[in-house]
Length: 355
Image 1 (cartoon, one colour):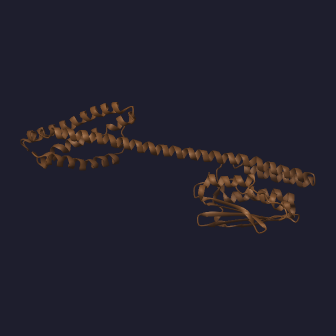
Image 2 (cartoon, rainbow, N blue to C red; image 1 turned 135 degrees about the vertical axis):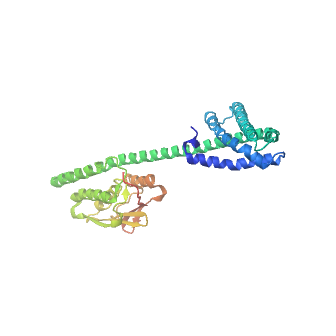
Image 3 (cartoon, rainbow, N blue to C red; image 1 turned 90 degrees about the vertical axis):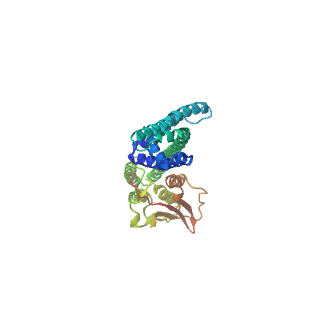
């Protein structure tokens, strides 16, 4: 079925668009002489109404015969025959209307006055039909372009989701490896603390694995996961590890990708607290400015120890996850500021429902 016939509103607008065309046909016939504009309007109004529906038929031709260099001959024959047949409908409708009106005794001699304009009316009908064919091809091309854009956008979305899942799958084994290495080192020194660390690690893994396939969680849940991880490391470092939180309440419900903060605090422990005999503090600050969330994780470090020249796997994954999820709306900054190493994340606080 033609798309215009599926909606009464569209069909009504289409028929209204024929009013200027009817006026043009009336003017052309009147300007050619031998007939008044009233005569032309009377015979053309009913026939144009029928012809308007006939001019919808190119949609079926255009749908089955796309434009192409090897189809010009078949298209010329098809549209030539179709335009001739439909123009005869226009001419025949005008002639029957003139005969009916003249037979009713209202406009005597109308058939004779119309007779000299039938060839002109036929030619106008052919032009209008071919114009309709061109417009249908243009409409189909626009529709195909929109469909291609929609499919491309869907493909990009699927690719982003696949990359995010891949990054998450790579991040979890990396974190687990580091945690087991810490437990192994602690087991040789204090078995009781190693067992406690195993229990806390199990709790953390139970919480993180419970996320399943969720693409987003509230920031408050992400902060709870970060605290859970730090509790695991607290068993190992004791009073050497201190945590300072500055979290704005307005940010608590902002959706974030799961396990976004864990690599940051893990990096702060590994390259900061673990390298200082007296230990150090990890500062976790969250604030909201406008529609954006800013998360800062900073830690002290031993200035005599060489800093890594490039981001580790965890921080690289965090930056990439932000790029894939938020694009240019997000930013990732990491570097040394005085005697602290600081990582700052900025991304929009989305209002969409959580996955």
